[in-house]
Image 1 (cartoon, rainbow, N blue to C red):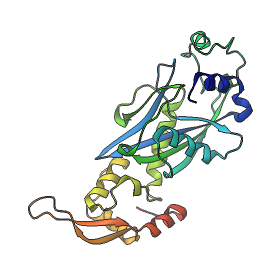
Image 2 (cartoon, rainbow, N blue to C red):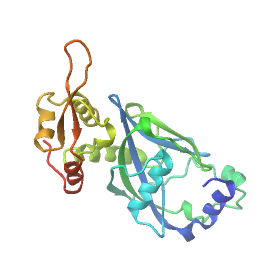
Image 3 (cartoon, helix red, strand yellow):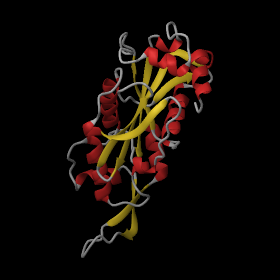
Image 4 (spheres, helix red, strand yellow):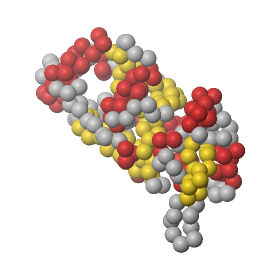
Length: 258
């Protein structure tokens, strides 16, 4: 939505193009240099931050809605995107901090009573993981701010989004043992120390520096290159890359990394 007219039309007639009472919310985790962040948005006229998401078009699948919303906010496509849970508590959409009078003034609508957006909504949770330095964050007429936040210091969130973030993080960490999520989080060529640091950051736990990378090599996910990186006197570790054929197969069929 790029204009006020688009926004008003969505509020008044969105139920004609979107499925009422069903939405998606995306926990987009960003990684770089041992830092893990979460992408949050703040809607106009709402004080707290929330996860990016939106309603599902009548013409699209749930996954298509999730990919569309991720691309709108980050500028990226083809991320590893995983559905993890549905949230449908009867009191999850509390609008006690929603100033209906002010919104009525902004939009020119006669009333919000009975509007399709005010009804109880079930949301399907997805998560994605990306290198946050490669994103181009975008807001629009309904979103006042869009920004990365340190995962260890998140602000208070709207609705039940703190529950969604907690469950998304838990799901992501479980899936790390079954899916190789790191392809888009590392440079094309990397050291074993770099992939070790990635997994330690995502899992928030210490991993054996010698045994953990060997498991990835044993599974055939990593290829040792005939190149080294010079990082100081007498320190030139070998470089590795993902075997993309084995990587794509592992994303489809899964693996066991323990």
